[in-house]
Image (cartoon, rainbow, N blue to C red; front, side):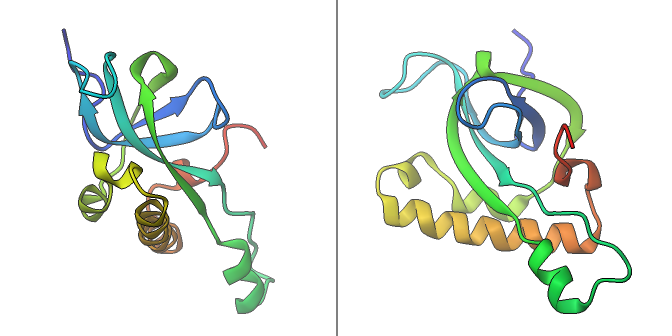
Length: 136
């Protein structure tokens, strides 16, 4: 079987609370694990996208509208739709692991780190497609 969901691959979630949201695959588990019998991936996605900004806006308003709310999740492959895009986040790979999901405090800490990385990526202007919702 060809591996479609390699780390860094951008996909769209098809079912669940985050349906229609874009995610980046951080780690894939092809033959299942002790907890889950099906092949799945650990993904990082954007729950709330940044809002539209214009030149006329001041720095304070621009900073407020450029906020990103991330989520981390374990998703079955059948609930993901792969895209042609990739997203390089080397530092995220260390923050999210299967142990992150065991305790809520670890999960919150990793979300804060991911939020910072995604906002830096957004303000630098890289990967513009990833930071836009599918439908406006």
